[in-house]
Image 1 (tube, rainbow, N blue to C red):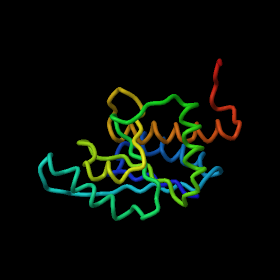
Image 2 (cartoon, one colour; image 1 turned 90 degrees about the vertical axis):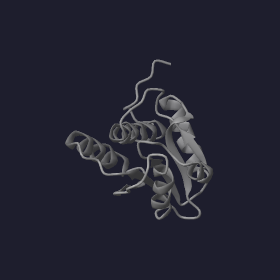
Image 3 (cartoon, rainbow, N blue to C red; image 1 turned 30 degrees about the horizontal axis):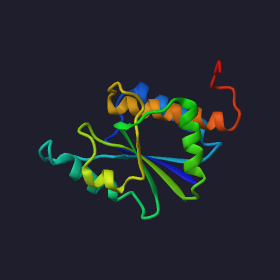
Length: 156
């Protein structure tokens, strides 16, 4: 089993980079995790950008991958629900789960059609770099919950 974090553009802020590296290192005991940052210099209109980014994403997505988009229009869940959701994805028996963070202008309709699901981290809007950090932390938290760790504290 492998989880791929497919991200448009590179992280540039040092605190973001070190935070992502921190959480990805904590995830490695649970699952193979591969971050992929796609660099592009697409010179196109804002309207055409999501479709052009889709072509770049498709180079990294395999036919049998389970593709999950991270998008503000996706379904929201709390951390415990996300852990259960992640377990349900793992139970599907796919070799790779690919979580995709798009560009600033969202995903094309074609990319949405290719996805198994779309999830949102919040109804708030975050920078794409911050989404990577927050999602890395939530992914670690989910694995920790699933394995009975003490990282997640819950009153209920």
